[in-house]
Length: 196
Length: 196
DNA sequence: CCTACCGATCGGTAGG
DNA sequence: CCTACCGATCGGTAGG
Image (cartoon, rainbow over all chains, first blue to last red; front, side, top):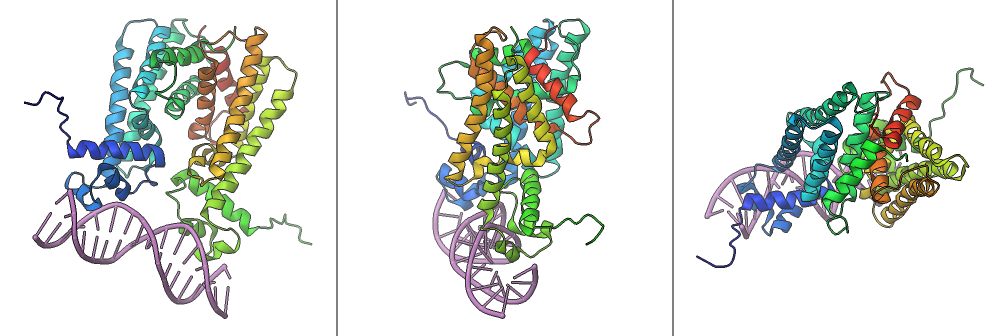
């Protein structure tokens, strides 16, 4: 047994990590299998012993990524906290999950459209479920008087999800504020608004 | 003189329109010059009598698009309305500009990263100017007590711009609400928040 | 605006 | 995991 921490490298994992990084920076169509192979440190043909193709890389990343976001929101949705607290927790959990891996989130929420069917349709449905969870929290809060009745709840939800979907575009792990602080700042903006 | 309204078709314009449509749907790297030629109704080689290359199509679309958004925000920034009214006008003007041509906006705010240098650096700078205008309105409102002092103004601005950048992803010209109503709904969410 | 074509590069495979 | 290679497709050009 070695005393240094062993980091058993599963080839499939390193391929997926390279793909996340490159898809995030150059987009799915701007990344070639040769780019991924170079990042992993093997020759292009060698990738195919571990994955079936470029599509599969994207669908694996997107589906496991959305699943992660969905698991978190469903936990919060089920809690018995007041609606404004649940909304804040949902926003903070989203920001925290982005902070955990901003590149993965960028791929999950911006590259899913390049999935081939039927994976694309599955992604659309899972994304709709995610939006629906926020919608439920909003509706519950409107029903019990916590939230004001918005002009149209859909546009409020689109605004919130838009703000959240954009987080990985500006979030920097090198920034001075931690994910919790940022989550609270975003939640303040969306829940309390700008007005004094 | 013909009595029917003449619509002189400038070949360069129809190429740009086709490029906007295809770049919005399939992304810059997911669109080929052959796709654009087919949409225009010419053979691929014929495009090059009117444009210098694929890069130039993207940079023309992005630069004129950002210029449009910048012109509008600068007009609003200069007005002497209270900060909350200026912020609402800025949000509404953004939504109205998206509604005018959602596909163009999708290209302007999501495909600029595929520009070659130095066009990419120019786009980054113009986008920063756009963000800066929103920042100024927020700071002015905080200074005169219209807005509460946010935890960190940057995160409030990122949230607002994220919500706005996402509008072309969900805006539908076939929807039942007009752009003005949608602009007010988005502005309500961002300025007044969700709380009752 | 078309015909005809270019060198480069793509995702992926056969065989070891 | 490498060597060697495939058919397809890419952005773009020459010449008319």
